[in-house]
Amino acid sequence: MIRVVLPTHLRNLAHVTDEVPLEVGGEITLRSVLDTLEARYPVLRGTIRDPATLKRRPLVRFFACGEDVSHETPDTPLPDAIARGAEPFFIIGAMAGG
Amino acid sequence: MSGIRLLVGTRKGAFILTADGQRANWQISGPHFAGWEIYHVKGSPVNPNRIYASQSTSWFGQLIQRSEDGGETWEPVGKDFAYEGVPGTHQWYDGTQHPWEFKRVWHLEPSLTDPETVYAGVEDAALFRSTDGAKTWQELPGLRDAKGKLWQPGAGGMCLHTILLDPSNPERIFIAISAAGAFRSDDAGQTFQPINRGLKSLYELPDPDAEVGHCVHRIAMHRSRPGVLFMQKHWDVMRSDNAGELWTEVSDNLPSDFGFPIDVHAHEPETIYVVPIKSDSEHFPPDGKLRVYRSRTGGNQWEPLTKGLPQRDCYVNVLRDAMTVDTLDECGIYFGTTGGQVYASADAGDTWNTVARDLPAVLSVEAQTLS
Image 1 (cartoon, rainbow over the protein chains, first blue to last red):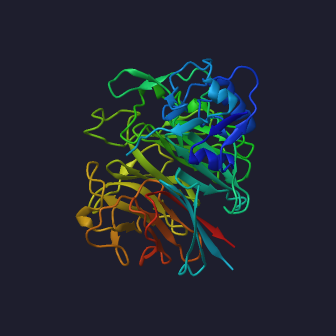
Image 2: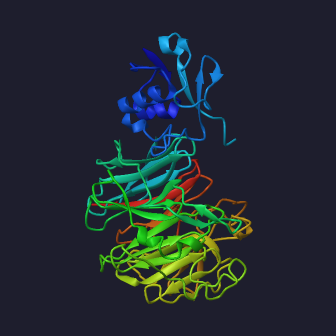
Image 3: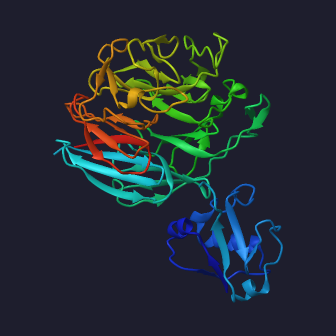
């Protein structure tokens, strides 16, 4: 079970109050986690990635085990601790705007 | 029992202000969509309890919300605004061509006759239409064929901010785009033509015959005379008596003819309102006095309306979509400021009351007259 932590605005949109547990099939990558998240919460489609290109939105960042993995390719495997659910996968809004 | 519902979009959420027909005591609900920029909220004239809202942030992009109960509850609907075909390019600040990129929805205009149809004006400038209650959106690409390659973003972005639907002719649509100009369709949005003849922008646009490139801030019409248009341009207040074929300046004795909103009295087609702003580089009222100016002659003869408005040390702005009128027998007029105030007049502007004082910066105000 993957644990995903959403930023406040996206938690409100998805009507969740805490971590989102996700069953992700196959290899655990940015792409597979986000695909599963968007399939479960269609309202989030387009808020994290561009809906057409699937590129990360510029002011959204991904963190895994304390590391910024925002620039990893979508099919790079996430750390084992994320895949086992020992650590949550963080989606955050970048500091911007003053 | 009549009443008014004000739909207020702000930098940090939407607010709904309600009052009975006396318009003396107001209740405020919100923030709805707290923390999000709400560029515009507008209800269907056919079904006032159906309300559409444009919700966005730079972080998480664009959503459209729809309410079926007058704004008590909301449901996210369609948010895919895909340009038709290959998006192409427009002019960039350095004179090169730049790809069209969707950024946000500035304005939502529900159909006058069909609650399922709604138009969206977006940045980068384009017009979209939904015929299924905002579940899906299709671009009307004929607009960008109207010399779109020559359009160039202004300081606020290349936004389509005004959509006027002609109540007497369903084929006719007027739209306006910052730093591009005004355009008209006579075939329900399939094709558009620029309607900017008579506009003069000597410093920004030296070519007096330029068909596009004029920075139109807002246009307005009265339902009974849809061929008469009023415009607040970057500088200059203008009117057209022939559906935009030719514009003439009606600024005359205004303290500044720079500004953003313009609106028309609900029952007097020659009574119009503007809020003069000092200049394009100083976006606040002249002399620190917040004054609405009213002309009862369709322009040229203007009177300041000040009773109840701050007349010293006021340095707010009033944005293009942030003024509106109601349709009660004694016309009410409303506007919001970048300082978070919402002012209301129940007597056509003669006197004003502060109905909200400390909201986030107000981006838009729409009034619904409820029976």
